[in-house]
Length: 147
Image (cartoon, rainbow, N blue to C red; front, side):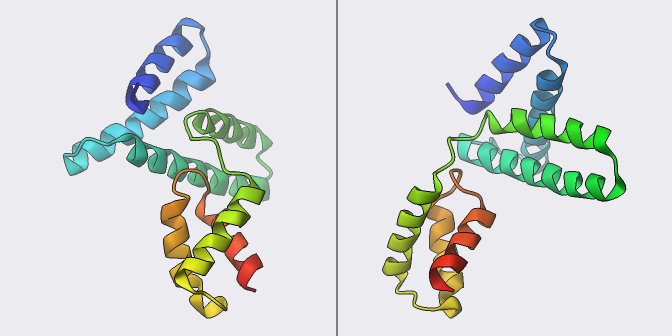
């Protein structure tokens, strides 16, 4: 079953269960998908939808940090609930141990030896870990291994 179909089925289930947070969060994802499909006249595949969900999580994380500065705990909880629902539709994230092992392989493949080679490593690692590790985690691991 495609991710898009799963989202449609889950929104119906959430509506029947009167799970407002899940319903609204899935509707937000569906709106993001529809907007890109209409604007760019393309059909998004699962990989593109996963990237879109990751972008949505990143936006909500940024909003949470702004709400913390403003002391808006009520809004922080709402954003966190949405993030929790969004994460249900992402592939299982790679563990730190496996990320480190994979990053060592990438570093060896591109022949990186110092922080000057970070760009080459990030490019290869971002492709290898697409969907299972976000850019921030990859970046931190590169700095740890090369720095």
